[in-house]
Structure formats: structure tokens, C-alpha cells
Length: 428
Image (cartoon, rainbow, N blue to C red; front, side):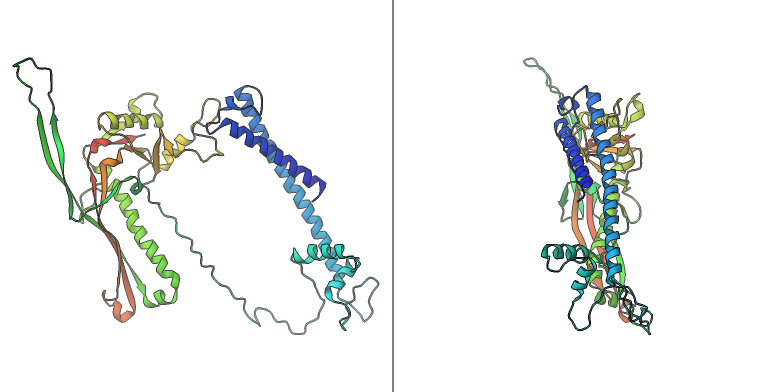
């Protein structure tokens, strides 16, 4: 390592250590009041922190340039050695200084390299350094100057063999997110039937001796959500299943994934109608609450989410457990800054919280941009009548005589929202 390269590396390490101490003292909230590594006001400390970061970038750039210079020097020396090792001769006479490798085995190729490099083979330390530097740690090409009368290349000889790596790059598809917030259960029935308290009038009051009691009124209504089926099938040839082992794993992954994506979408968008009938999703459920950000002047999106949580607590008599939000809307929240330019939800170098007011967030584009939902998801349930089932058969249509298989995937589930008022849909 050159002296300059060593000096730059040490400078970069010191600057990085200083940045690390500042970040450690500032904590997750980047509170520069706690920082003692640099002096000054909070603004001056923040400016010093950024200056150290800029200095690191400058040193790194200079370090990269120096490494390229060292590499270029090594390449030059390597080319010079290779030129000495073998130069095609034009006559039987060898010019002075030309490398000679005797055919009788009196010298081997390593001896020839050492001779070209001007190294005494008896100097073991230098021999080891030269061989390690120019052979063991590097790839070099040595032209031998042989004249071939018949050229054997990839067109007249063997075509180079190519083998697939086995890696499969999946097509970009929406991840499954809403399902993660919904409590899961099971059912042995073809519907989830439950009783909902639809009337609750309680008139308890102070009463004088022998006075008349106030009357309460309770009423229960039977509610039901039917089990619905989500399914698909895939035609595939016998040869594809037999000849490519990877195909089975690929199909077993992608088929069920398609069902779960559809289910994830139905939990929000399902209309509870149609032919065949869909699940009844959150966005179509009667009785859910709503909140319009524009209804409160000056509110930011994050303010609207908090107010929606208050409605869930007060009107829904529930405790919010999560937030559904479109990635575009969460982007605006995550990039919020203070007047002095500091990021409210954490420095860009940090992962940042996937929470708002302590509630976990599911970012999903199933919700349209400008829409979010704050809810107590414990007042809902995803009940499985039958989990994902995979079946295969050649009895479909003419598949048997054509050597094809039909692989089918299906599941049966019911989605229930027990208390609609525990869900508040927000227009941001």
C-alpha cells in the first residue's frame, strides 16, 4: 500500500468514527442538544455533522482515485514483465536480453519469469513476492508466439457450453399486506353467523325510595357472512413437469400466491355482491366511519390520521391497532421536514419508523392514493373453511390424450367485520 493510500484510509476512518460518535450521542431522534463531540448551537452542530459527512465523501473520492493510480501502475509493471517473458522471434538468432526457455528441461517456466524480472532464484523472499504478485493473485495472458497453420475456434471446434444459473427472477407483483393485519381463524360451517347488539339503551339513574325505575332496552340481531371460494387453474404438459425439477417448486409457489393476492384485494375492495359473490370488504361495509382531512383547516395528512384514530376510540369504542395507507401518501408523511430542514420522522440515513403515532403501517396500493384507513382490526376476522388446496388431474377436456395436466388451486374463506364503527376511512 502506498503512503498516500494509507494516509487517506486513516483520515477516512477517523472522520467516520467521529460521525458515528455524533449519531450515537444524538440518538434515534437526532437531538443535537445531547451531542458533545462538536460544540455550538443545535444548528451549528448539525452543520458540523453535515460538513464531516461531506469531508468523508471528498476523502473517499480521493481514495478511489489513488487506488486507480496504484492499479494502473501494477498493470503497467505486469505488461512489462509479460513482454519480457515471450516475444515472437523473427529468426533463429535471439537478441540480447531475450528470454530463453531451454527445451531439455534445464529451466522451468517460473525460472524464465524470474530471469525476465531480474530476480535471483536463490533470493527466496523476492521469488515468493514476484510469483505471488504476478501469478497467484492475478490473471495474466502470456503470448507464446506460436504460429498455427489451422485455427481451431468456436465455429470449427466446440461451441462454448452455457448453463443456466437456476436463478428465477420473479415478475414484479404487489406484495400481500392487508391480510397481515387481520386476525385469522377457522370455521367448519359454510357461513359465519353471530349475534350483533343493535340496540343498547341504558337509562340507569338515581332513584328515590319507592320511585319508579327507568327502563333499559336491548336488542340483538343475527348477522351472517357466507364462506366464499377463490380459485384458479394452470395447464401444464407432462414433459415440463418431468424434465425440469424446478417447475414443481415454481408452480407450488406462484399458484397459491395468486390466491393470496386476490384475497388481500378482496379484504378491501370486495363488494359482497356479483356472480359469483365476492367477500364484503372494508371499503364496502355499511357503518364504517369516515374522516375528511379538508374538514379541518390547515390539517396535514398525519393530523387527519390522528383524528380518525380519535373517532375509532370515541365513536367506535375501540383502540386502533393499525393503519392502511397508499405508498404515495406515506411518502409525503415520511419526507416531512421542520422549518430548519430536519426530517421529522428520522434522518434519511436511518431506516425510519414504519409506524405513525405508535400504530403499525401497511403500505399497499390496493387503497387508492389519497385514501387511508385507521382501525381496530381485532373487530374483524378472516375465517378459513379450507386453506389453500392444490390438486392435479389429466381428466380435464382432452388433456389425457394430449399429455397435459390441469393443476388447480382454491381456498374457501369468510371475512367478518364485527364492529364497523371500529374502522375509519380517511380521505387525505
